[in-house]
Image (cartoon, rainbow, N blue to C red; front, side, top):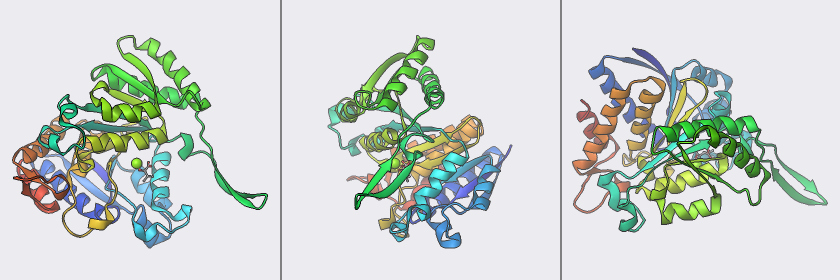
Length: 357
Ligand code: IPM
Ligand code: MG
């Protein structure tokens, strides 16, 4: 098996986690006999510095020609003052849109070895938190019209949130199918007491629910969901929601697991070609210090093997190695606690690589 991976090394401490993740993939290749070629792609701050554009066409093209895209994280203070067209985030949004990656899967699961790191009360964590957020990724307010104009001498800004029913239906279907493979419970999150997009969302979801009688379906308002996630997170199996609500709730969900530094994500469209990235950002404050946690990026590579390449046993080998490393008490700084062994980014990756069988 040979696969071509477009690799976006990203900005700030992202470069360190991507470097370690490639070493993990090389170990997989060594043991399991598959080969990976890596095509370096500049996107985000790096591309702005090189080309004055967060995602130039020639770099996007490399992603389109790959079997999957691996990304660390983009952005940092160096580009914060830039106008919108020249911000790192604009490159990422364009990449998602141009590759048609409308499904974003963000799992939030407590690693038993890290249960104490959760900011929630231990009695809540012990109830076993294991949920999946299915976030719509190429529609809604992120991709509506945006403008700042002058009206009667003062500035006025608008961001338009719109959804076509087809966009809702295709993400809804993915969510129901995801629930069918898990505990068969789906919570659709909206703000139907205020927004028309949410009323349409709810209507389409209800029609779909009739096709999936085995799935226990419920609607939940987004404000309530934000509260339920910290109060009673074990009630959730799969959550499906629109782009911006999903952005917000997935940060919340990942934090309650104890470390956002552990949570991978995957973005898919109609083909197997996907984009794999950690949920966390580029952590500029710790860049170059060899202390960033590489686990979320390494676990994103595991998702890539599973979802884009169909390499289930190789994916499991990575996930098991991460769990065994935690069980052997190795911790990066963000998940460190007393009596554990603190490891830097490279040392943590070494421990994981040594446990891949
Ligand atoms: C995420 C990030 C992005 C988003 C930013 C960087 C544009 O927060 O992937 O969650 O809002 O989608
Ligand atoms: Mg986010």
